[in-house]
Amino acid sequence: MRGKRILLVIGGGIAAFKALDLIRRLRERGASVTPVLTRAAEEFVTPLSVSALAANKVYRDLFDLTDEAEMGHIQLSRSADLIVVAPATADLLAKMAQGRADDLASTLLLATDTRVLVAPAMNVRMWNHPATQRNLAILRGDGILFTGPNEGDMACGEYGPGRMSEPLEIVAAVEAAFASGPLAGRHVLVTSGPTHEPIDPVRYIANRSSGAQGTALARALLALGARVTFVTGPAAVPPPDGADVVRVETAAQMLAAVQAALPADAAVFAAAVADWRVANASGSKMKKQAGQAPALEFAENPDILATISKGPKRPALVVGFAAETDDVIAHATAKLARKGCDWIVANDVSPETGIMGGAENAVTIIRQDGSDTWPRMSKDLVARRLAEEIAKTL
Ligand code: C5P
Image 1 (cartoon, helix red, strand yellow):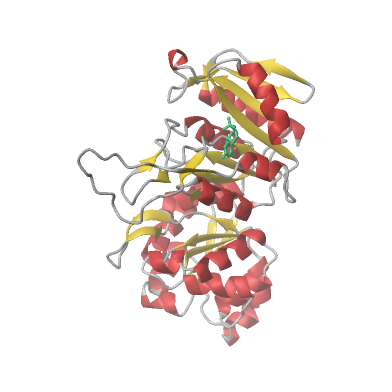
Image 2 (spheres, rainbow, N blue to C red):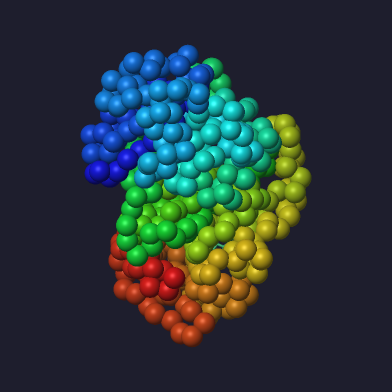
């Protein structure tokens, strides 16, 4: 990050206080920070503290005659290596999605030819609102980079997704944006973890996937310079720093998140997606009735890998996983044809192998034209080798 010029747009939300620490963290790593405050941001942090921490002038007004004489807003928008918007409020995201330019921050974001990374922060209802979700889909399609939001307690007293990424998480996303390597400029989508299919509001059907292999793979792809969208079910291991993490619970949500993340140069489907969901899931908690077990009915879940492999926005390289307990190669080879993907990473998850939830994996890569069996090794090493194979192929 040394020597990189970052234009930091601070939006008007309570998370603006974290932007002060972010400035320090970026500067510690050798980046220079030019801050831009929206009018609302000034209600949360003062231009003086922002300027002092950035050791730089703060830009605030579109029609400031001195600023315009020194450096016009168009030049300002293009003088950075990366624009970071933190916090990105619902209002700022809406303006960006619509291409509005009614203040300095939105004008810079519309005029720029530089990449933009946003760290959204807002109340959970605002985040979940269809209007915000529509805007996010538009911005993802425009190639805007995202970090967060995280799930947790909110300043407004509610709980859920909407907390801005922590400063060090934003730093990791900035580092990922500047990453060099054979996959620099490539977008790779990774699914990971199990899915949870609700039975009622408190019970669900799940599986033993920890998300370890998918997470390791996302890390390895980031290390080779890729931009990674990481769509994860409720996994046991934390998601990789620097990826755009999209958290989902059900298979249906995972499919929607994957479709929203396209286009991508490659997609790796490492998630252990539930094959069925409960068709008669109850909206309220099922009551225990003596001598009466509830009868669950099942409906088939969408096959995400097959849908994307055969869909209109198919990435150039589509990789599936096959966790089998018998006849691994035969089943996986059949799966390659059935799903329409390019490679299948097949592994034996019989309980005696200790692979499911363990730290090691033994895989065979099955392609249209043959297969390679790798020796048993750590999931990290499998991930690194697989990422290298992907880089060679793209
Ligand atoms: O059919 P099976 O579940 O064994 O296939 C495994 C592969 O298919 C994995 O790559 C998994 O992520 C993907 N899959 C999927 N959607 C499903 C089921 C499996 O994407 N509903």
